Amino acid sequence: MQYTVVPLERRNGLDGFQLKLIALIIMTIDHIYYFGSSLTDMPEIMTLIGRIAAPIFVFFVTEGFAHTHSRGRYLLRLYVCGVLMQFGNLLVNRFFPLPDGAIVINGIFTTMAVIVIYLWWFENMRKAWREHRRGCAVLYALAMAALFLTFLPISMLAQVSPLATRAAIIFVPSPIFCEGSVLIVLIGIGFYYCRNSKRAIAIFYTVFLCAVLALQCLFSFDWTVVLSVFFMWLALPFILLYNGERGRGMKYLFYIYYPAHVYILAIAASLLGRVW
Image (cartoon, rainbow, N blue to C red; front, side, top):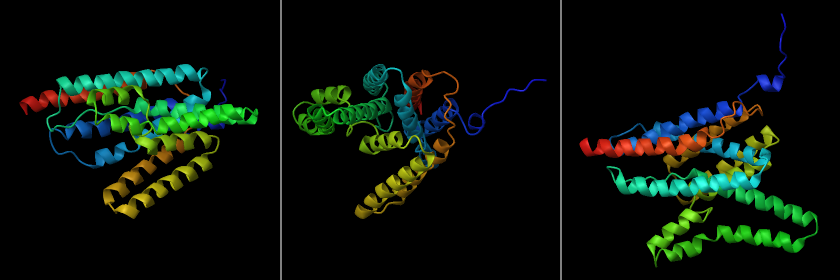
């Protein structure tokens, strides 16, 4: 009898596909809570559990950025998916309004695109600086600052034309207006630069969330916020289980499942609300 020897690091932990699948299930629970709440009271633990999903997906976006053969195509795919989903949100909100007046605002693709943009520009800035192309490095720094500050003209535009504001939010990958805002973008950047050390990931993520919670508590203490941050932190054990293996090659599963399940749940809640 012959035995296949599998390296220890491949036998321990979970591969990328398995962890993404877990995150998909957790995310679905959160969205069932959101859309189900438009019809009836739902257990709040469902949305708290849902806080675990986004950091796992963000971690794998940084892994994808680190290992992709074409960063340009990777960014374009995320950006186009984000734009298309914004249009999908508009259509669903227009023709299938939720019973309690809530709206579909899901758009994590744009957040992922913002993370990739900043990682790519920052790496290019560092490379230009090392190669003594100081002017080019400064341009990248200015571009990063300019993208961050796009929220100012977009906010001012809201006083002039709501339609133009909506168009700007759809097409401009703003780190302020994207889903999860700067918090999720910074987590993604931190994961990328700590990716080669599980200890570094654990320290960064724990310290970062503690800092966020401390700042929040300076303004007002809220147990809901404390629980939300704690459940976000619970993504860490899953991330630390990652064994570095890609797993099954179904990279388009998330691109299809994410918008599909959101719109199915939203449409179902809208239709049920009409006869509830």
